[in-house]
Length: 456
Ligand code: FES
Ligand SMILES: [Fe+2]
Image 1: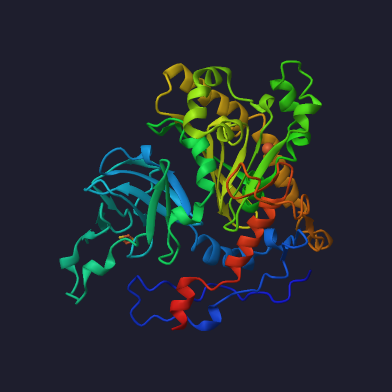
Image 2: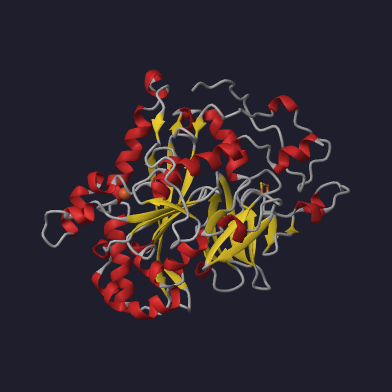
């Protein structure tokens, strides 16, 4: 496996939904590298350059993040018109708000004048977004409504309507989660998720009333490429017994860690061609939920409504990634996004999700359980973060960087199992990892809509 062609320096294309006048980026700013030699799905091999190469990272922003559906937040973060929160899509800062009609909208958080952010707060409520640099102001519909001292300038012939905030191309919600994409050609969110929705429902559809989020968003920075985390949540149950040995001992009633029957947990791992993946034990003793939460659920009712397989599988101690960078842990009530911050760092944003019907004491038990296990200092979270940072830290060594990584576990074991939708493999498998990187490579090798437009 060798890198056959390195990309040039910077993105040469731009979408045509903004006013560009006679601006025309020269084609030699265009960059693309054929990554076929970096991801070998058939043999389960991955070249470490995909975690370290800055040029590949820039291509990733333009072809993976720009084209995919990305998680923004939970609908409960926006109660009424004017409520907002800010987040990122890839490295792009965005505002998510409810307009006057109550519709959820998302805009690039960058002033059309000189590019400063028009909103610096994490969340709040407002009537307009006013830039603190020169004071341009935009309404909840993204329209430019105020240009201070405009009359002080010699009059120019311009169309103010063309200088509103740049809006995402598509926005949709599923089980209370808000997703958006810059890509006008992206297939609907429903299609991107496909069978993944069945697995998400086992977590987010337990309460017919839906879910809510509590405790704000916990945010922390971690050394390591974002893909290491996203991939692990999609495919990796294998690390649990080793990496989390001490945490499992703490949780085990005997203090000795899980017995062999649980350590070698039977279970299934779902994966699809769109890069989504989730794994879950099907052993009845593999449920590590907080006691008050466990006692809260009426499992017979859940079995009736969601099906036996969902309750005994994806509702247990599982893990999941919706491609590219949204992940969740059903039993901990954790949803999180891995924001890319260059090749070396990620920012983790994590929420605690609760069923709306949960009484206060159950909510609090779930919130604390999530914090203790998968908060930034959680007993499991620290183990995972340490691994990703460790892998990243040494990956720049020349020899290290040239040695491929192994994703061969369970090669060829994916099949339709007759119980769970889509293709599944054993729980201990790299199937979802192979498909995660195959999807990544497919997008990296496909000119995005904005590049195609630039070519025309
Ligand atoms: S940069 Fe926003 S008003 Fe000038
Ligand atoms: Fe883990």
